[in-house]
Length: 271
Image (cartoon, rainbow, N blue to C red):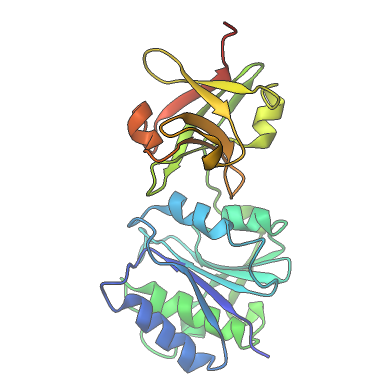
């Protein structure tokens, strides 16, 4: 039985890159099902790719091979790795891209540095390791190859980490970063239920967003439709992050925040 391959990249769909990687997998593991999570990750945006990949964990097949390619360091000394976590295995560059998914799967158990000479039956280019290293490695793993066949084992503690939001939690406030803005203008903050509870804000019906100028009040809601048209609010999004939303409008435009901006969340003042 072959294992399914869950594929994410920043390749887009205008070029042949995604299709060629599919062709590689079909050649080396003909029976493998490939699930395209997304290929619309912003170019070279490792954090956006890491966040997107991690959202699949609760819903993906438990034995999936995660193939993730957002690789601004392609051809440099950065390592390519394959990592076992739970019943799954992850393949990609060791640049932090895999970290959140590894956490979601319970942590890394074993890891190897991919040896291009062991995974690809053709010459390896310096600019397309998705085709020449990562897709072949994922295909071989999907076909049943053991991890150690693909390279030398390394200590999982050596794997690169990715800082997300870097939240500073204090009583009554969370200082964090906007880690994403979706196409609807919802702001995803680098904090979640744990940080809200730690700050003593979980039961607050209204939060205040401090960025520039007067604080913006955010009514706590469960879903977008709980807000009146044009009203700003705060909710826990589908991936478990604290988000700022505006019903039928862009919260990002309304509050003047974008990816990477710092903001402080606190309790709204009693009036």
